[in-house]
Image 1: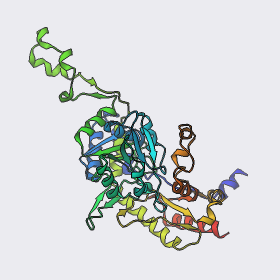
Image 2 (image 1 turned 90 degrees about the vertical axis):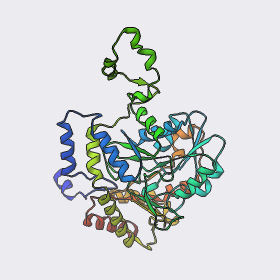
Image 3 (image 1 turned 30 degrees about the horizontal axis):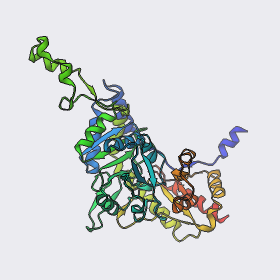
Length: 415
């Protein structure tokens, strides 16, 4: 009986999946055979290549996108009593990372078409306690960075881009025609955060990064990910108190050798370090990033042509200032179908489509409700949640898989 079931079981197409090839595996194996498995030479190599790709000055890699967010908020000095503005349509980590430091997330409603934070509603939520704005490039579609940077400048706020969906995406400055910059360049922000989870544009298994052009932020990030410790002699603050060599008659030419073991813990950091194994995979994946993005955009174009003007759901839009990297392909059910979302979702899963929902608004989570957040705070975001379904979108989708997705989606609505 089990053999018959397996033979007839429909192929399950997930909403996202990593793409790993022989080159990736070979690069990881090289590290496994080397002297360094943790913080070795692959870490700075990956950071240099990542910063170079995005057009930023510095990159600091972490063991997850969540820890990278935590590090970015820490570097800005976010703390108890502070507030920061962000979107409710995101993974909980965007807000949680601020809670770790004692700050309060303030949620601003989203645009109904992109799912991105609605810049026109931000200023109403700014108070004397607001320190920063964290826009989320939902599904890989850049937010309106010109407007957000303008608001931040006028109110003297920091900007941290949550670009965990948007590696490979581009933004066009509205004041300059065809002036595209890559998300991660930090041209409109103080820092940009990335994720390398398996369903993202490149993967290191788990992993993340913070990009910045600010040297002080860079130094704080490097220490924060490694217990708050530094071995940089130019940053030592307690060295002279502990090492008065003249009193002990130690010859000065020996000092440099003694210094090799010295370090200082200057803040309460964490063990958020990435390994060389992960970095090697990241370097190899980065070489293929442009190809990955091109494939995602090609899949999105096939979906767009197949689903254009259908009467069941709206398809993703792309604003004139945005070049989306399509982390997700998020459809939005028409009003007359949103009350049937549970049924539609279940039927899609039953016939082999690994659809998902992104996201339950963060403030509706039980933990946030206990903190005092209420239903109805961001009505557009709640409506977006009730309508959204993410269809399969990843570089490894074959033409026949894409065709299967289209046929099965339409079958669910037509039957």
